[in-house]
Length: 64
Image (cartoon, rainbow, N blue to C red):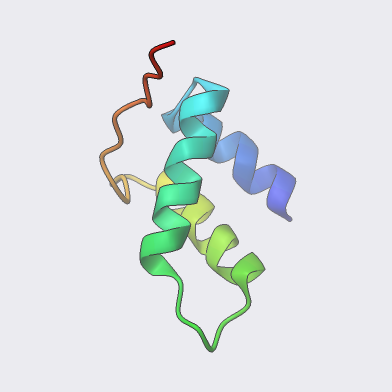
């Protein structure tokens, strides 16, 4: 279930914004056109929750 994967991934990336950015970037890099995007998101969350991170992500800083 995705909510369980989110809670496990949140142990690795505690900031919700950074977790969202990490999942989005990992999904874009991992996605294959023949797969459902939902499956790719679930895979990204599983990999983030694992021992090794999928991608190194810097937080996006927006200047006004």
